[in-house]
Image (cartoon, rainbow, N blue to C red; front, side, top):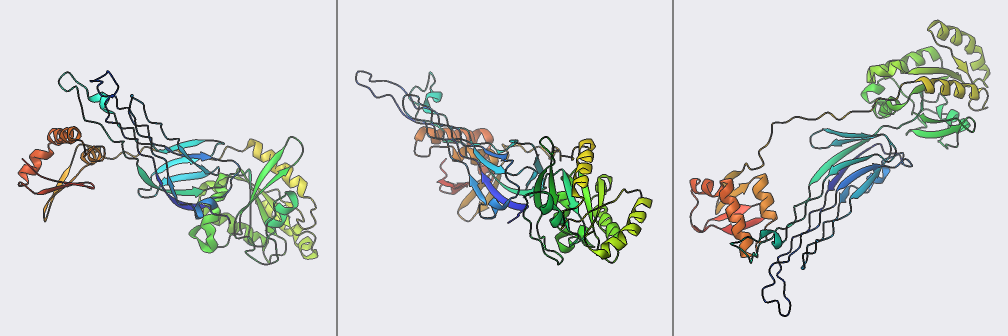
Length: 419
């Protein structure tokens, strides 16, 4: 199934915990601290896989969590850092932050990578907390927590040539005639409900990638017939083959309608080179219409070509003409990420909220410190208390009216207040 939009949740790995350990060996009564550092958590990375052409994998896989770093150990051994979690996406994938709408990247190149979330750093072992006054530190750090994000993925197919036209114009028949693509083909509108990709080799040195875009109807730019979803796939193509239905009551009206819909969706689509192809020349009715249609299109400045996709006649000249235009066409525009400037947030800021049995403290720095504290080690708790004093949390709690025995809540941790 072709899927060109998806939302996923990603979370980088947390750092491993630093070790609180002391050297214990025979004949070494005071070995001192030897707790090693924790390893770094795994990053979240999106990587282009050129063999993919749909986001269908994410239909049933929507949560991606990287591994945590390993904990530090005795003898100053550093824990192993986690490998990055690489999520493969097709070329042409645009990545947005689903919560803010910010553009994070436009992945178009083969094997291109985009770092989404960095893994948390490993916590420091107690060897880092030795000083001349404190030579037996029962202090260490837990690993830094990983970060999470909701992503919106949007796919714009990357093809040399896009085949457009009204429903039942013969686009899928044309693609099937020139490539190994196997699109569904029948004699009724809207047979094609999803874009199809095909590769055609003109000779040993020249090939083209073509995309059959489902038939567009009036109002497509506003979503009629899912048209707005299909139109974006045309934006990546270099050249358009505009297929006309030789059995239509008014092929010129169809031609004008499709061009209008493309221009309303994106004015830049008007600048793309078009090869106008009149199809179904195997039918007498189409043969009768062809001279008048050709004359009208030539007056409009086009050089139309006629084919029969079903009989596979005169299709090669169309492909060679497409190759000629593709070679001179500008490269499709890649979206550039623009830095989003927001008021600079002070990570040391915090907010105190009174609750029934005490106070809740929220803030980026204080919550992060709470997660990285070994609450079972008295030295680590004292270090956290000093940090509360440095950030001004203690003074703010006193000003808020905290009393002996009140409970202080920070993130998922709670402790009783003692002066």
